[in-house]
Amino acid sequence: MYIPPAMAMTDESQVFDFIERYPFGLLISNGEQLVPQASHLPFLLDREARAVHCHLARANDHWRLLDGQQVRLVFSGPHAYISPLWYRNQPSVPTWNYSAVHVLGRARCLPATESIPLLMRMCDRFDPELTGRTEVLAPEYVERLSKAIVAVTIEIESLEAKVKYGQHKKTADQQGVFDGLSSSSSAEAQGLAADMVRLDIGTGRD
View 1 (tube, rainbow, N blue to C red):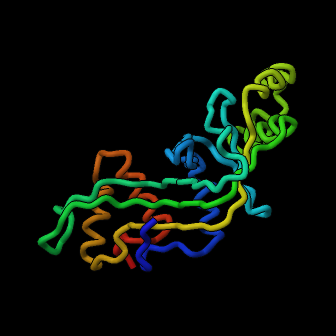
View 2 (spheres, rainbow, N blue to C red):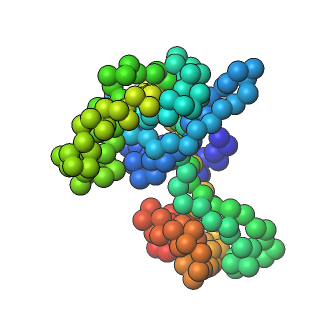
């Protein structure tokens, strides 16, 4: 991923925070005859082990290409179109502001006995109210469904993170963009503006 120095997120804890905030990502690997394969999946980060876990449907042949292979994960944060009309300094051009994290790692398909524990950890992470609700997650039902998935872990080898929120622009232009996003009716624009405030990046405010 192309990352100008001013847009790099280099603090690993912040990168891990990003993955946990935006856990739905893209798993990419080389397939047969080097044709890229991709699957959209939720991921569970294990900071201590420096690994990311997921599962694929057994019917998805992508899992058959993963064991022992180097893969790339892509996580996307808020993003939105930036109109040149928002800049105070002209001439200007349209652009798109966004944040993203790429993970390079080595995939390992886990034994079937790991499927249910991974499912339970993902439920604890994404829907903790399900914990202990056996009338919903009946053990025999979970056991049957677990046979239809393949658990995968990706050991993290390197991280790349980029935050392109217009922080390289002049203060007046940052303010114009932030005001444009904030007043937009677009949910994507509003989400980007909120994240700019959260990170205190690109708002043009002191």
